[in-house]
Amino acid sequence: MKDILSRIAIGPVGSRDLAREAAQEAMRLALEGEVSPVQTGAFLLAARLKRETTEENLGFLDALVGLSHRVDIESPDVVSLADPYNGFTRVPHFAAPTAAVLAACDLPTYIHGGADVPPKVGVTARHIFEARDQPLGIGEGEASVQAAAQRLTERGVAYVDVSDFCPALEGVKEIRRDIAKRPCLSLLEKLITPIRSRDRTHVVTGWVHEGYQHEICALAKDQGFASTTLVKGREGYVDPAVHKDTLVQGYDHRGGNTELMLRPKSYGLLLSDAPNYGDITAENVAELWDVALHRKRRFLPGQTVRLLAGTILTQSGKASTVMRGVGMAHAVITSGAAREKLAAFTP
Image (cartoon, rainbow, N blue to C red; front, top):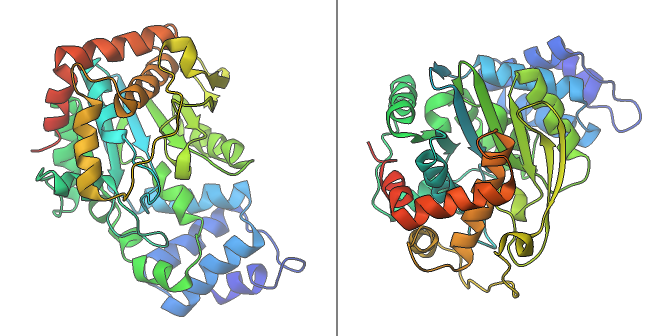
């Protein structure tokens, strides 16, 4: 690690980039605790301040995947909804209700994350499930990952916690808190993808800063994902807006590049005003998840879920157009099938 720091921690002018193999070894040393916490913090900060190259991020992700429990399942298609692990603070998000809709459309979908992840330490899906009194079957390490994969196969939905599928990553949480800087881990942890299909795994995630969409696509293609849907959403989350247009980029199930402007008005989903949700708490968002899947009430949460699900159904090849995908999502919400799938997250 001293040798690695001597290369990357010199400054913006003198620092040198790491080859993929060296980057993988550096991240492994940091995550497995073979170096001091001071060196781990220095490494994460130096890599961020230098700006990680694609080659380095490929190596860092190799290390994360190698240190994770991973399960391949027989379902021909699996969707990973990959929201930021450090949560949200400004607006609610709806990955779990969207996963329920996709599962009701015969597209198995899971979400993953943690609790109290720095630096933001916002509200996460795990917090919301806890507020809903929905146990998730977490805390047993690899056994919990295996059980989640089984639920995904049988029920079409599942939640996997980072503390179970990558304990080494969970182990550097306090270091991440101490450095008070968003390291490369904030991007890469979303792409570990601990449950994958033996045939086609589709990843859906968000992006904010220009250029990151290309980095994510490069990493996703290297991992062999069948499609990657990147939503320029709020706080880096996957939810598109329904009061204005939202840009979606990535590549679809045929491998073709995607650059799509989602225009809610085109799908009959436009709401004219941005909502004011007040305080964002796990309890409040838990109620909004129910509103999103209400069979008759078509407010912003439900419109958001319809638009996101319709886009994913199209990207994965389950629907021929976003309009038809939105129609499929609407059908399983009004039938009550999606609400049943939301309950199925609980073992």
